[in-house]
Image 1 (tube, rainbow, N blue to C red):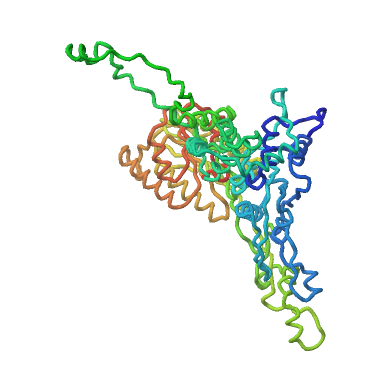
Image 2 (cartoon, rainbow, N blue to C red):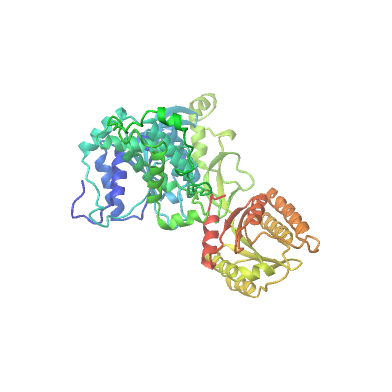
Length: 606
C-alpha cells in the first residue's frame, strides 16, 4: 500500500491502528493522532485511505466551524429567493459513512467538540434550529490531528473519551517495527466478517478488570477495547476473539488511558510454615492396616492446559500487557501519584472563560436587541427573518421589502479568558527549613519562570513564627519574585492556620479582580502554632483544620505538596479538608517538585 522506498514510514502499531480503524470506522469512533504535520502523518493518512473503500468520503472540519456548517441550517439565499424555508446539508451529514479530519484538534472550541461528541454517540445529526427540525444519519469516524506541543496542549476530553486510539505517531525504527502491509481486499474481507465475530465473556470480563486495575475511569474505554479485540480477530481471519486480540486491545486502548499503577500482590505470610511430615496427623495403626494402598496417579489426557488455567490468569496477563505498553517515564509519574487524567478542559493554567458583552472572542449569537453596546449580527438577523417574508409581505402595504421585526434581532456573543495568578504558599518554619525549604525555593523559582513565559501573575506567601507574611503581591516581575524568595528566612513555629487563611483571603481578592487564582501550598501539614499565636500542637491542628474547611467552601483550586522527608497522614488529611490535590514527594529535588506542580495544575486535573 505504501511505496517501499518512501520515507518515513509509520511503525507497526500505527499501521495496525490504521487497519483496525478501516475495518470498523464508526464502531471504534476514531483516533487521536498526536503528530506534527509532515510526511510521516501524510503516510499514515495514506494507509488509512487505502484501507477504506474507494467511495468513502473524507472531509476536513474547520477549526472554528459554526453550528450551521456542521449540522446544516437555513440556506439564506435560497430561502429569500424561494420565499419559503430551504435547508442546507451540514458537513456531518455529508460525511455519513466516512472519515472526519479535525485539524489542530488541541485548539478546537467547546462548541465544536460537543457537536462532534454527540454525533459520535448517536451517529445521527439532530438539526433543530432556524425553524427546521431534521434527523439525518452520520456514521462517521473522527481522525483528530493533534499538533500540540507538550502536555499543556491537549484536545478536549469529550473527544478523547470517544475515540478508541490515542496514538503518538512514530516512524518505524527497525525491520521488526516495520508496518504490516494489508491489502484493501483483506481489510474488506475483515469488514464483512466483523458482524460474525464473537467475543467470549471471559475476554470482556478480563478487559473490564484491567481497565479497573489501571484506573481507567471511563466506561467507554472497555467497550472500545472489546470492539478493538473483535476487529483484530476479524482482521486475523477468525470468528472468535482470543487472548492475543484481548492483549492487543488492552495495549492500544487501555494503556494510554491509565491513571495509576496497580498495587503489588499481597505476599504470602511466612508466620505459619507449611506442615511437615512430622506435623501431619497420622492415622491409627488399625486403620492403616485396613486401608487400601494408595492408587498411583493416572494421566488425564482429556484435560488441556487451558481448562486447568487458574481463574483470573487472563486478567493478570492483560494487566501486564498494559504495563508493557506504558512508557517508562509515564510509569514513573504514575507511581509518584501524578495521575495523567484528561487535561483538555476549559479551565486551568490559561484561565477560566467568562462571558463579555463586547470584548473577547466571538462565540456565536443570541436573540436580543442591540442595546448597551451589544453588536448586531446582520446575517443571523436576516436568517431569522427569512422564513417569515412571504407572510409579512402579504400583510404589508406598499412596496415589497424585506420585513425585519424586533424578534429577529441577533447580537454577537463574546467570550474572553480570565488571566491566571498562581499563589505560592511556602512553609518557612523550622521543620521545613531543616528538611526541604531550599528545595521548595528552587521549585518555586522554576515555576515562576514558567509563569513569566505564559505572562501569568505570581504571588508568594510565607508562614513562620506567629503568622503569615505576603512576600510578593501579584506581579509579573520575575526578578522581583526571585529577590523576595531568596530573602526568605527559615525557622520558628508552624502557623499553618494563618497560612491557609491568608491564602484564602488573597485568592478571593484575586478572584474579585477578575482573575483565576491557583493556590500551590508547600508544607508538611503539621501545625504547632494556633490562630491566636499560642503554641500547642493539638489546638494548632484544630485551627488549621477549621481554616482548611473554610478554604474548601470557598471553592478554590489548590495543590498541596508534602515536603516532609517521610510523607504521613497529616498532609493527606489537610489536603482532603482543603479540597486540594496532594502530591507526596519524599525524595524529589527542586526539579521534581516543579514537575509535580506542572502536571497537577494542568487543565482538568481537579
